[in-house]
Image (cartoon, rainbow, N blue to C red):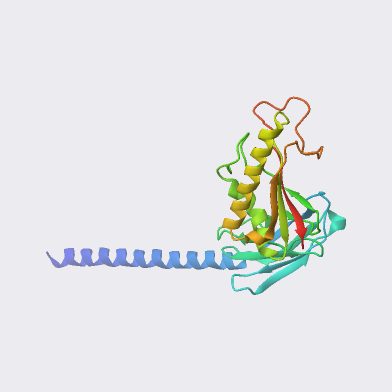
Length: 254
């Protein structure tokens, strides 16, 4: 290889190396810019605190903690404004625990994980506050059973998580489980079915860490739910929609 070719080859190698170095530096700067943008992004948590039984707005005190248990921020909902609350100062890529308190209500806790790619300025989360008084009947909002079945349906733990979490967070509360049938056709069969449903719910809660002594009783009912809001419809239901008997968690000791 003559000198000219050597110089040409060397020049090309140098040019490639310089280009690679420039690309590398640009990538570093871009990465730093993205990190800086991420650090400067502030996310707010907003929503409404609502009485789960009545639907009325609630004034509640909300505190947000980081994974080390350190308080990040706090605020309160406003019952005169639909239970609205707004808390800011959260960061993308972080996980927080939100604790909600108010006298005569269950303490509520939930985990808030914010994606590191989150760019929307607000994350919305409505808070359902369960009244904490003896006799309060908390309806399971999504039926955990299929029609005429007593075995918990697949995925029911997702709908029961809210109740389980509330019981774990409020360890002095003791409850009763009560289940109602899907129809009024056969009282004997209804009683057997709903008793098995109540046992299935009790088994779920005890296996999830709720000690058996906190469930003061679990029973089924032979007649349909007497609450007109939760009893079977008197007319025809929408096509494909079937009525499933209601189940309640009733507060018996606080």
